[in-house]
Length: 327
Ligand code: NAX
Image 1 (cartoon, rainbow, N blue to C red):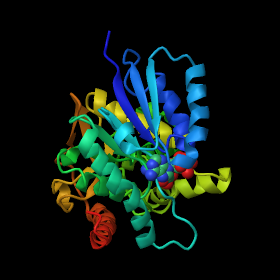
Image 2: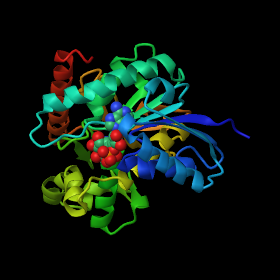
Image 3: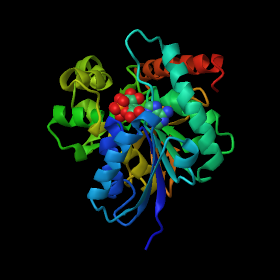
Image 4: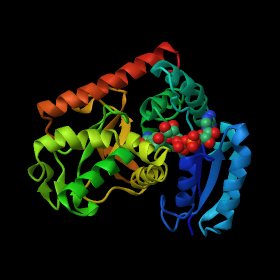
């Protein structure tokens, strides 16, 4: 029997947490043979609500759920964590400037990075979901000097999954027929859902859809899907975000299928001309618990422009958090 691994989740009493925790505990993330200990972090006023979620988790009698720890102290919640899903964040409120948002989140992700640095497993895999996810991941990473920068990642998998589903719908094919599309850059409206290398049942996607639809409809629909969900549901994406977080961590830990890739926000090594160090969405393949950027893809002028624009936005966010002394 496998030893339990420790999975820390922040913002555990929130909307995404309410889907995510049950999926982790049922074995969807790390496999049906991998026991888990959940280590849940919340702000003090939410600890009571969190106790209710814990009661429900226990009521599921999940065979793989070995233990549950709750705390309002990151030094407790991150202790020996093998995986950390940083979901809790300060959402943008009406009238908030980007600088205000980055500064409010710095107050969360700087101490969390420091705590991961102090107490987490030396091999911890960190996924930042809380927005602005890429730059929050950068803040946590830069405050964890004893960990490897590549241990910090940001979620663009929801965008990736949305892009797969939109293309499947358009071509009338199942989602399983779609392979090798990429979300480049920031988890924001500047993201670039790229079909240049994508295939549908083995045929190039861009031979099946027209260019006008791709540029004028597909890209903005994927990039603005979050707003469309809020408009329809009256609340932001939660179950789909949790599902994407499960997919991101599962693929990182257990590997991507042979011949396929997924999109992850990871520190740039300069590949594809992306400024080094930015946490940027790249096409990656995973195996043996690590990821590698897919190299050698063609970059058209159209792609170059989109990839540079989203890099520019991330560079500006980085400059802003530098000014604030957060990185
Ligand atoms: P909720 O507001 O429902 O839950 C957030 C929870 O985090 C709250 O319970 C709050 O008490 C807690 N929290 C706040 N500060 C904390 C701290 N310092 N330590 C621990 N917990 C803390 O938001 P929810 O809908 O769950 O969304 C969470 C985050 O995910 C938001 O930042 C949201 O913008 C982001 N999203 C990111 C997505 C992505 O693709 N990267 C998509 C979905 C989602 O919008």
